Image 1 (cartoon, rainbow over the protein chains, first blue to last red):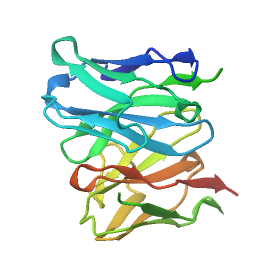
Image 2: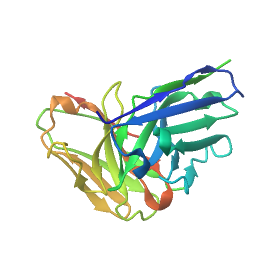
Image 3: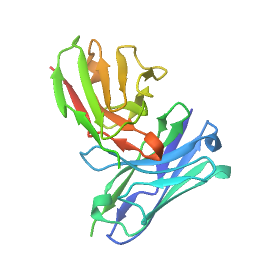
Image 4: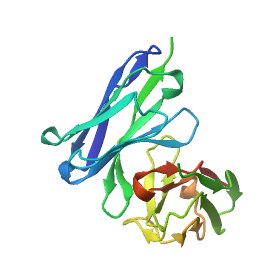
Amino acid sequence: EVQLVESGGGLVQPGRSLRLSCAASAFTFEDYAMHWVRQAPGKGLEWVSGISWDSDRIDYADSVRGRFTISRDNAKNSLFLQMNSLRPEDTALYYCANWDYAGGFDIWGQGTMVIVSS
Amino acid sequence: AIQMTQSPSSLSASVGDRVTITCRASQDIRNDLGWYQQKPGKAPNLLIYTASNLQSGVPSRFSGSGSGTDFTLTINSLQPEDLATYYCLQHYNYSWTFGQGTKVEIK
């Protein structure tokens, strides 16, 4: 079954760090750009970051640039998001998703919850 | 940054109705727009890509149109299972922005 599974979320104090992971299975992970999208409780979707198949191009939302770092390991079919200097407004469900060639987020994980609170 | 203005924020319609949701981009994005459906407690699901192309497996009552700055998602003959929040997403020139979402309720 084609799937993405996120992990690494949890409760963290403001200013601390957290690293999210996304494990891909049953599709050719290395062929696809991958992204992180988040959703604060009761709010809409917010694009966070994306990385090309070969890690050559990386993009970030203004809200996380300089604090978050996206990376991938194609040999391990894995995507990562290193989140530093976390703020309460980073509290959200974080999804990973692949970017299909036709132009859309085709496969989504179930999300991992990050809560930033003292 | 490209802004997406989606309307309405919510609507209530009866089974069998035609429903229209619009998104307006703050600049020309050609046809670099998709539509997503998010049911309560679930991850989003791609409905339409590049403005008007129906994703495989999506019912044909969903359709998309538009280009440039103005886009529309239409649900013909609304069904009970269409209860969800719908989002547009622009992806022009290596930037991605979601609309604010439209919550669709069934009367």
